[in-house]
Image (cartoon, rainbow, N blue to C red; front, side, top):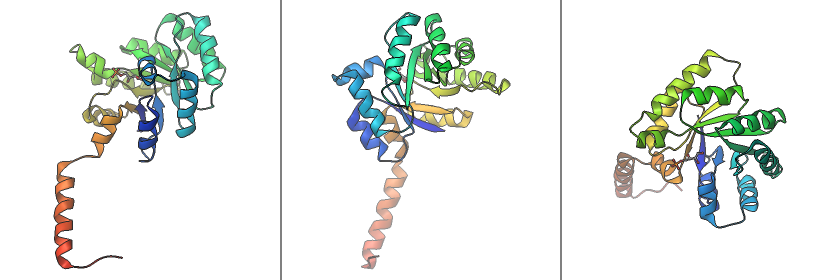
Amino acid sequence: MKFFIDTANLTDIKELAATGMVDGVTTNPTLAAREGKDFLSLIADICAVVPGPVSAEVTALDTDGMLAEGRRLARIAPNIAVKLPLTRDGLRACRALSDEGIMVNVTLCFSAGQALLAAKAGARFVSPFVGRLDDLSQDGMGLIGEILAIYGNYPALRTEVLVASVRHPMHVVQAARMGADVATVPPKVLYQLFEHPLTDRGLKAFLDDWAKSGQTIL
Ligand code: E4P
């Protein structure tokens, strides 16, 4: 399973890219606005750090506006994935941009029916938001299972399931068990995946014992 990081913060992106675990980046207007920088140059800087897909979201609501913004974003770098909302206009723009060879990430997906439409519109990625469903006492990961089952029935569909709105490491583990293609995780969750108290405790005990031996390796 690929790991994308869900942030527009360049410092975090550089730090996490250095772990070797980052296959791409997702941003959204909220994350980008938080950085207080020029959007287009921020996205260009991110694309220069991470060679995998970097999602940049349009803000227009109509198809023509989305196409204009999407084409502008796609010119930034070859690894741009234009992020479009799962609306009628968004899916029309998805079909057009995908036909032009531009990667599209269809975002704000909350149902299996919507995910089916995104795949039919040629999306490279569909982003079901699991955490936001969980917040409403709905089954976010259940939706991932449904979408994977549907896509599995039609091997010709090329759309990758990108698990979004991830809140904790168990979302990532469940996504991997289900066979999701990608999980986009906030920096905090990626760091949490590295951690286990028994790793820390075990390492300390090993090194304490080793110190008693008085030896060094180099
Ligand atoms: C996905 O691409 C979105 O940017 C993101 O996962 C939304 O997560 P949130 O529900 O934590 O805002």
